Length: 274
Ligand SMILES: Nc1ncnc2c1ncn2[C@@H]1O[C@H](COP(=O)(O)OP(=O)(O)OP(=O)(O)O)[C@@H](O)[C@H]1O
Ligand SMILES: [Mg+2]
Image (cartoon, rainbow, N blue to C red; front, side, top):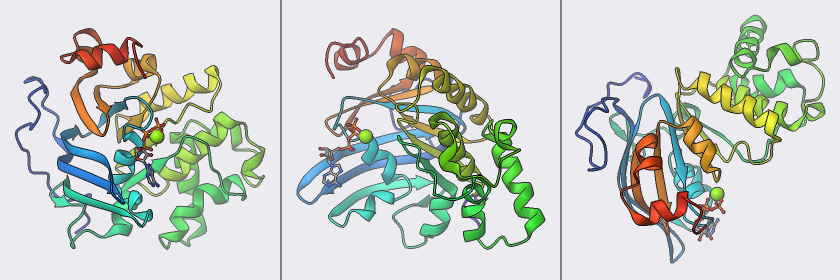
């Protein structure tokens, strides 16, 4: 059975900061996750539950482990040969580190969009069709439908429908980032990880992407690293504050930004360090 289709075991929140009226079930239940690059520990006893649907923001100063954590969720971090992890990350009811987990399936269910738009030097159409072709879809009509659906979902269709067979490298930075999102959506993921997705974009492209994130969260679970506190506040439902590889606080965004429980969170979100 596909991991996407498996039932979720609803558990009690493990983090005391979670409010009682939060009934969303977790898409990831992270339990005591530790990660080392060689001898250097980058993640320490990470334990919190990421709700299904909606946007979870990951904030914290440079080098605190945000990207490492994000890349742990689809095990991309293991492309670094010195990486060692302990603990569990339950995705639905399977630990992503267990032998039962099919890595190809995990990485298609948990897609990723990076800080710098990274389209392939191919046509717009072929960029979006790439993942679907890798998954064995050859039927031309089906591919065309999937490409159009993904581009529409990524709010890019109207801008590119007349130039699908032109190079993706001719698009603006903001369009390229939405193309990368369309490429990710074409694989039909359930979770989308975004690592500072707007940091290379101008204010108007940033706004477009934030609106897109708002639309996508109805259907997907989004986990977004951002250095922009206003952005975290605007787009996320929950926020995790990382510091030196630990989660200091995890709560509803409105709660964290108005009444943070920890003075270090308060100092960070109010720009007193980082
Ligand atoms: N490939 C790697 N090999 C060794 N150490 C690494 C590697 N990638 C990251 N690290 C270390 O792990 C720690 C966390 O890095 P990470 O990139 O996760 O931080 P970050 O919070 O995403 O920072 P930034 O905000 O600057 O992107 C840092 O000390 C970093 O030097
Ligand atoms: Mg990073």
